[in-house]
Image 1: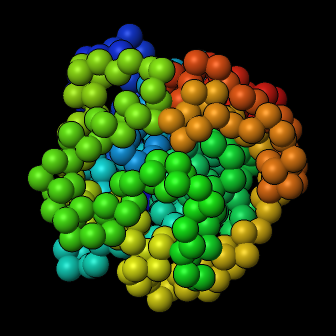
Image 2 (image 1 turned 180 degrees about the vertical axis):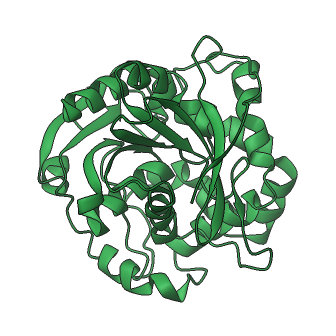
Length: 317
């Protein structure tokens, strides 16, 4: 289906100097997906996928380099973010991991893209990992920011091995309560900004940098999508029947066989990455490189965009 276009609005903040793509939208079977496109329309496509609680502005330092290198760069808003909307106003707002990955395939199908390179972090990395597992023929290469990001949603969720890990995941337990739903509804910007700061504790985010992404979290589906995602992954909310077979396969945590580079932020608020590469080597059977990136936290892309663009260009050379 042909995409519609409209000019993108101006922005301020840390990424203000970067060239910005054209804001478009495309219809899939479930969503009207807003996305930015830049680069050569005939170039090989690269899809950049943001996470929670971020939006496409996280890629502002990455996209121009890839566009200048001759690639077609596509940066979609995930379901529940920015201008992306459900087609059916009565459809339940669900966001299990298999659904987010299906959105990537549907997005590519709607644009007539048979194969692309993927890069993502947080939810976006999970969507990229699952796309590479379930539809490997559609993925030329993957940059996995944070490593393997697929979980077992079929078995009951178990407590983490340490209190520190449980404490770092406070927001997930919070969102599994009605108080958490009400808190996210009332205080979404305070919560999102706090997570930005704690997940990248050595990076200083300015108010201006946050404000260019903040409107994305005012999407009317944002709260429902976030709440469902975190409740489903721990077994406290049902998923869509159409994804049950996929979730059962993902519960086995199958390896990823597409050419991949793993990037891990040295300063992640979830704790420093292990120097031992064997875990990533086991999960990515065609691992080209594994890099611990200095000067970056959990949301590595806006902090070290060069590491992301270099990795994609290396994989596609």
